[in-house]
Image (tube, rainbow, N blue to C red; front, side, top):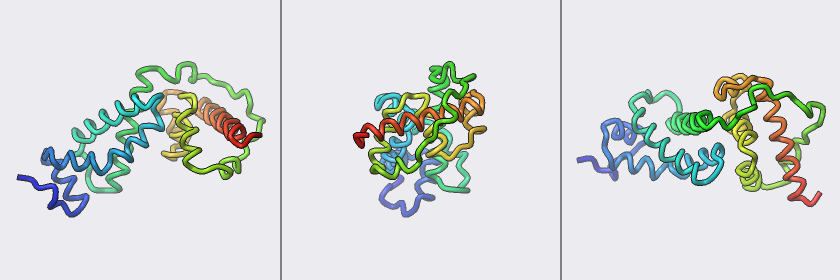
Length: 184
């Protein structure tokens, strides 16, 4: 019988999950669900969709846990799974329809990077949650996952130019919302 109280390390927890111990899977969920839900929120249209991504993500983690080799951060490995679950759903629902050939309409308009320093990080995250989905996805992949435009383009099935343009438009959207918050 597996005793979750006896787990002393993340490695032991992962090993117990690999052996299919449900109490270890429950403990894994308890430890990581809040952090992974925050990841899901960055890609979901709604909180309900984020909950679906969370559920699907943990199912994928449990089914793929044997592929985790111990190289690199376990949380980082999980995070990639949750991002991929969200992206698969977004592609399936063609959320970025029309983004394949987006051209840059405002390439010359500057983005003021110090706008972000004017507000609290929790307010930035709240604004990111409210972004139109196409901006939110590309912005999150670039900023939070640190993906290049080439990686984003491959992940979403769009061009690199479309990725750059959508990111730029998302940043302008964010800038305008920050101005509204600051009464400018």
